[in-house]
Image (cartoon, rainbow, N blue to C red; front, side, top):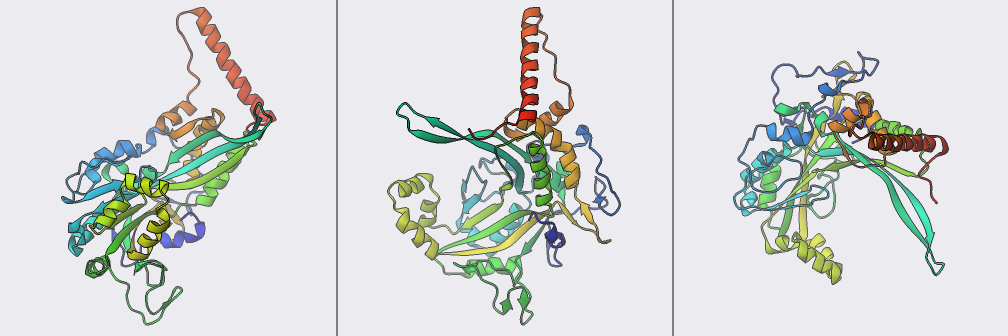
Length: 404
């Protein structure tokens, strides 16, 4: 993910299972870089809806659970009657424990449903600087100060039509030459495969076969994992352009631009007391505070057999038949043209938030006039705004955000 050289991998393998059947043409024309040489700006009204707005409109395939979700519609959550559900609020990683999911058919159905939920990739820009201070005793202390923390979610651009859940996503199992956990503790390739060269030519197992292998295992602790990935996104190109954008504001602090993906992992554990304990928050904290993790972590790591063999890939772009690239919604350059001004404005205002369509509109519109009806108050507010704008211009010329 993230490198242009990996774009060929965005073509669905021959045995991949499409997660969405889209009859006819896409609702949005595919963009092909062999036909279009420029990157026109897009009107704000043409934008896909925010993911959190579009999700409730998606047609539910299975009855929803009452499990809370972060940004996903409850209707998207599969229903498992005997399941215990845990979720990491920071990463969106889901953990399922259910006796019924040890049945291979139920597990396969569960994985296929979860694969239709998109990962949530974010482009995040964080700027920090170090402040050095001295206390009353003359002791020097260094503190890291966050100047801005701005993110933009890419999930809406993984759909050709977010309202009707149309995308190019597909589900695949790992190739025999990939190093991964195949019901093992350590990563390894399939027997008979050396690096990416298969010796013997055995076909790779299907999802159904992997589910049967998992169910047949007598391991005391085991977990079946689904990985969700965005593919076909030129991460380095976008990060380079965003660094240039921030540097043009004369920012002198420490800038970090990265692609952060939430909701990228789902793990289904067998229903045992130890697996319940390992996922219970207060037990985790107890192990940390009492230093019991020194013993519990190696025990769990050595006893747990892992199946990390299923991947749901969500293409941002893919290789077209003519040799160029086609995009499911918009290209990286179109995305930058759309969001560049809003990101620059948020950086200069030292904001810390996930930007949305309201920020896009605010970046395009002129500054609103303050009219309270009191000429004195209006004048004071006008002077305050002029002062802020003047400070921003001075920062752009003299530099801002440096260590001090």
